[in-house]
Amino acid sequence: MGRGRKVIETPIVERIMAKVVKTPGGCHQWEYTTNHGGYGVISWNRKQYYVHRLIAEHAYGWKIDGLTIDHLCRNRTCVRREHLAVVPNEVNSWRRNNKAFQDMMNAHLAELHALELAAEEDSNGGNK
Ligand SMILES: [Zn+2]
Image (cartoon, rainbow, N blue to C red):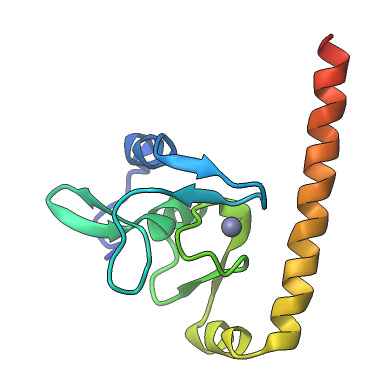
């Protein structure tokens, strides 16, 4: 995967984003097809791709071959760019097995989301 696709294809990203639901926790959750592992997948050019991988590849310009994508929120169907960390496989499995890291990351994401909600409220208030 990756080689030969030099053009960033916005339509596939739009197709994905049209099928996500924003959760109260701040995830952009893919609500359609998932594979056996519980990850979101989409058919594109007659092949199946991980939706979170396409989003990350789009964000980083396809230059993530050989790296894995760590869902910081542990929500396997989340495609939110800010929740996807591109890391070597060892880092991904270390994090997955490290409860302290996960607790820290959950707290961090919850805090970010609270700030986001507060900012949204402010801007809504300003439009009135
Ligand atoms: Zn998420």
